[in-house]
Image 1 (tube, rainbow, N blue to C red):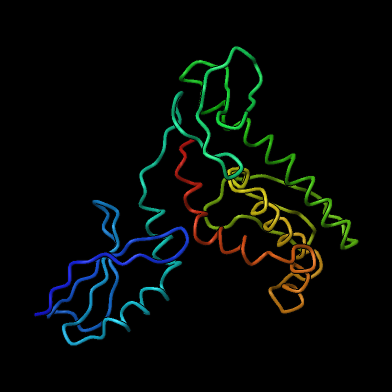
Image 2 (image 1 turned 30 degrees about the vertical axis):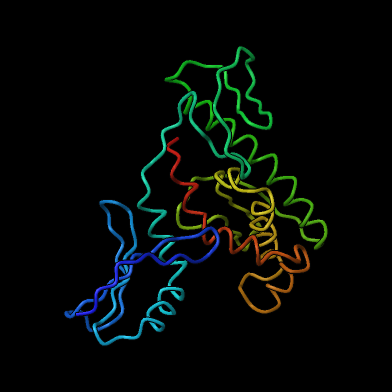
Length: 231
């Protein structure tokens, strides 16, 4: 039996997949280990290595989602890293009652057992301010106003728009790069004109944000990591 013990890396950011042959396998398959959170590509003994790698690359989004879902939760504490607007900042204790940041740190004034609540409150306020601003900007461009904006902590979707013009967003978007948050807003506001995903809808998204594909791709590859933070 062939025996390959190598790791293949591809994508941005890179993901690693362990490659091995199996005389029991009948098809190419990818397994995500819940123990050490690794991806393994299995190739039938008479299979094609090139075709197997092509198969793995075609499943990149699925692999990333699985790896992200299996990543251990992060419980914020003073001295640990925290993600805000695409930046990893160190949480530091402050005497100032407000939460604020500089280039390297996020400053919070509270007791350790209050930190999660303080951070969550800060994120929701910032998310509402940013999402309300950009949603109004885009809706004004389209000449359509939305009726209500709500925030939730949803895993299945980053935003939604109803036929009544109600917008919903995940407040965790404030943890992503600002352009990614803007893309989700452009996406949902475009539904004020097209309550579907037709060509006209995507043309509207592109009109609001010409480079939306890049930010849409970022969310597909990295979005689940925003849920790692236990708040």
